[in-house]
Length: 235
Length: 235
DNA sequence: CGTGCGCTTGACTTTTTTCAATAAAGGTGG
DNA sequence: CCACCTTTATTGAAAAAAGTCAAGCGCACG
Image 1 (tube, each protein chain N blue to C red):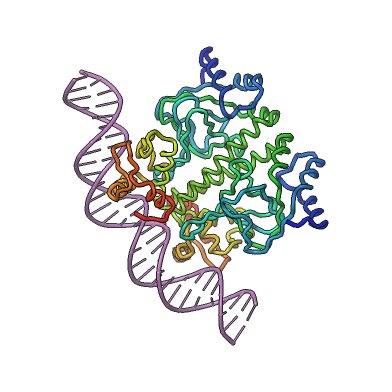
Image 2 (cartoon, each protein chain N blue to C red):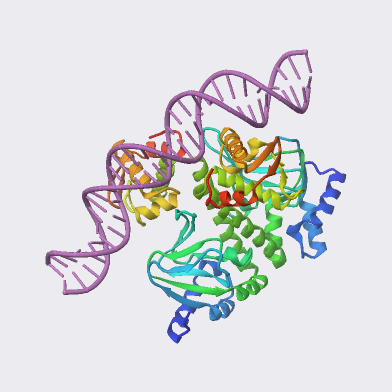
């Protein structure tokens, strides 16, 4: 929440290139960037908590942030993991003014905070920004739809298979994958607990679908993995 | 998809009063309403299917519509149930052009169909419409967040208790409730199956939380119902 | 070099689903 | 208005999926 000269300048430089502001007149971006505040958070820091009143929303500049729900007993469901350029907490600005979930830095991160009012008035004035916002929300809704489907209609092995295939899509080698989050985090993202994930990984490995070497996973049988992800095949 | 004179007139009258168009200049609403098409669907009719290309979106005029996902084995997860004035299928207009789920009429219904292009250009021109759209999407995202939380972090009795309390909020008597959907539908909405729902209702009834008379349910112990919904108490 | 945290594994419990059979309810046509 | 038939709801018994509790391992970090 500090506004030293150097971070402020960076904020401006960052804001202009954010997807959210694509297509906006540069002078307008500059104006809103001037009310934006940069916030540096160490790994593990809670950025906001569910129920907290939302004075604005954030965009990740560097690092990674997870947004998650917590059950009464302490089980955690990760809703998204956000990287550079991605906004979070916007829903609270537009629907109810309380954050609907918790947010925590997974790594030391730099964030931009945009106060609520500035954004609202800017959106009212700039259809391009409104369209960007709508696109962001629509895409997120689409992902949530998939998450609900997974949680309700698929079992853990199917979700895991789908995630591995998703990773493969954006990855290095042709048939290998590196987990970019801890297995505990992955469990929470898949809507399960570390013990179950561990067992499923072991079973999939033993059944010849994959080979696990720590965070490095070799996809041994793409066809069957896809069948698993669809729910056609079973472990 | 017919455009006889009478349905068209109705469409116009209807559109002007839709929440989505609140705050818009009436002449603009008239313009878009002229490209809107009224569609009448009988109970049970499939309105669109997942993956189908979306040329536009719908608003419910009368009746009720459910939007749902289907698993490979045929299990169903209801995403929302929409009543008069509520839009559905908009996400497909803004993110990818395919419907992410199925939609079916729960009752004989009248729908308004808005072609994609008209809406997009109108939104670009009218910030008020953009804000309405953003508000709609944001509210839906918030509900989905709650749905994900329920599915992942709560068990069936807690979800049912929460639903009953939600119904009580918008209901007749002080401590009684009428299910407005079939129990099969309710099961799908809660992310379970009719058998499980039936059993949970029986247990809750036998434990003195509620009294079930068909679709008429008396809430016998609000405190414990709330504790159940929170996950604090257990059946 | 030890302490701690993340990960794994085993044995057990709980929750939910599956399969099957029956009962009740609702709508339709005679 | 009733008989029939389809849909919807309930119940039991058994299986499966996932979660809990507890213990042990290994690696990283201080």
